[in-house]
Length: 550
Ligand SMILES: OC[C@H]1O[C@](O)(CO)[C@@H](O)[C@@H]1O
Image (tube, rainbow, N blue to C red):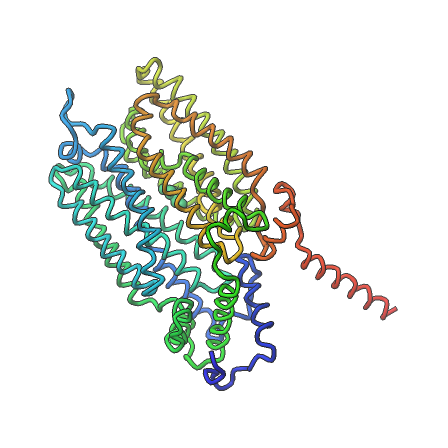
């Protein structure tokens, strides 16, 4: 940016680079203190506007959640079974392989979309990226909705839908983090997860409403609603200003000014817009100076890069291995097997708990830190899953036979309660905690590579679990719960011994933490040397003043 771009009234930084670096340094920490000075002069209205824009983008998460919430119901709809099922002795049924593929192909699509299609956002901008994804999404929905009785057509359609959802799930959080005011960044990015849970909840409600229709509207109406979501997201993207960061990166400075001006309700020539432009530019320069690491550096990089990369992969894998999607994808089926009157109702309860608990999560992650949340989450989910599996194996399927009605009823209710508690622990901790800690654990130059590997691990486990669950549940029933119980036990010790706290630290301070070799279980109490220095200065300063006064 040249000084000609400087609007009248803007202060020329005397030592621009250092001032900017300082500011950017602060902003690179997602935990920076509320910086009231950065609230634009137009005040609360501009604030609300930018938050509204971010919520529009977060709606991408809703599209993801809606799929999860509806597929669980589809598997138990009579019309769905009669069209896509096979002939069996008791009528049409969906074989394990069909169920596994129909459900899990979505995750494969997501992984591919997230890795490849999301590049559209880097080349043409986040808005065009999300709009293109919605076009793909609509194609996927058309393929699904027009399936007459070909289960593989439906499966292909779900794969195509997955491509779109994977793309959105990379671009949405990225777009939000680039547009949100810095001290609300973490919270607004978390809104993406909140929208996933809202989507799951609405998906459950819609399938609850359509399950009793007596034709294909049972599943076609929920699928048809997806067109509405796509239109909403496209209109939202058209209304939303493009990411200023993307525009600056592409040297489209005038457009970047307009974008910043619009989302801050300022004139493009306002000094505030100029300052913001410079801050973003400084961030980009810093990243460029850091360079992009080679893949090899993920193994050889210092300090402890390889350990951190492995940590990202393990945490994302463990997030799926908590077993949460065992409930979300197959909840309706599981609770029907338990013999509940209306397993669709049960799903709505689970969806409500998941949605509401996410608010607690947004608060808890900042209040207690990432490590503590993950530890409490692992312990809580472990206890819940153990109780769930013990009740299931001892009271519901004794020698493979469902026990008598009374026992079944009370055991079923106990299991619903325990499942709700499990989901509460998940939503408050591992749901957002994993993403948060991973996004804070890498230096800039390896950040995107390390995070994409970790995310791919999440999709891969999502695929494996959703594909294998029908087979395993049919083979060993509720004993499957013990597999997740084992993973949860492991997750507790893994977090305790290998995951360091990142709350309140800038990316550079996280590097220092690893360079000093601080044990993860002591990392929560660790104070970065720079902060220690400041504390000392202020103490000496105070003492000196006192002495002067004396
Ligand atoms: O809210 C539960 C949902 O959240 C996710 O973990 C994504 O963060 C999904 O895998 C799951 O279906």
